[in-house]
Amino acid sequence: MAKKKRRRTKQTSLQRWGYVIGIMLILVFGAVWLNVNKGPVQSDTVQVNSVSMALDELTLGKAIYAENCAACHGVNLEGEENWQEPNEDGSFKAPPHDETGHTWHHSDAYLLSRIRFGTQDLDTGLQSQSNMPAYEDVLTNQEIEAVLGYIKSNWSADIQEIQAER
Ligand code: HEC
Image (cartoon, rainbow, N blue to C red; front, side, top):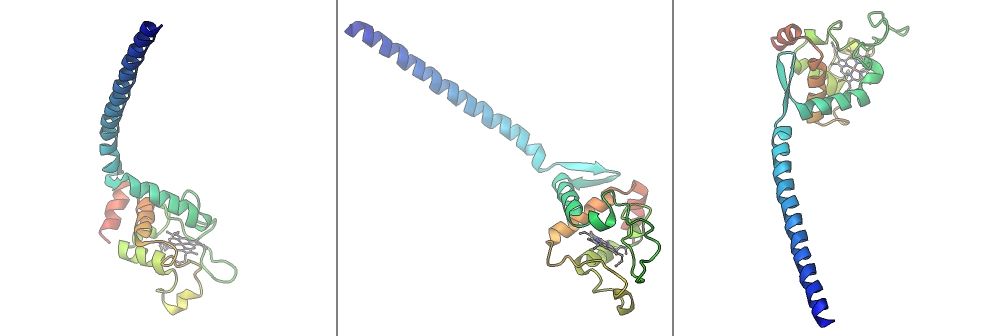
């Protein structure tokens, strides 16, 4: 009886070592695998028509756009229907942010400021005609820059280059 028991204990302790080594191997390979996969993701950039952007910024900008801007400027940046005609009260409709609009006619500084301050930095005459909200208390600077980055990522390389000179 006693002999048998000892043998079984031996086997179990061997098995136990097997488990321990097995788990250690899994941990080591797991760590190596994670490291291999972590490196590129963190510093990943994507080539969006000639301009390279950080993937996280693009993803963030896209989400911010969908949540905050798409309702007026269109899910695909197409703007409000008949955006060139004013509303009945004389106010402007939300223009497209794709190439058919005039967003790309403006400098980054102007666009960032329009997003931050909405109508507040427009000429007083124009203020009553605009329904563009101010996002300075809603979005962080990083989010505002990301959303502009996302808008630009929809433009062709040519348009991006022209806009960069503004
Ligand atoms: C309630 C509707 C509404 C929402 C929501 C909205 N906008 Fe606007 N936006 C407008 C209107 C209307 C205009 C046109 C009048 C103007 O220029 O002020 C405009 C103009 C702009 C302009 C100026 C474009 C140009 O060529 O002068 C920018 C840039 C802009 N919006 C960006 C954004 C971004 C980015 C968001 C989301 C964070 C956003 N807008 C959310 C209504 C909206």
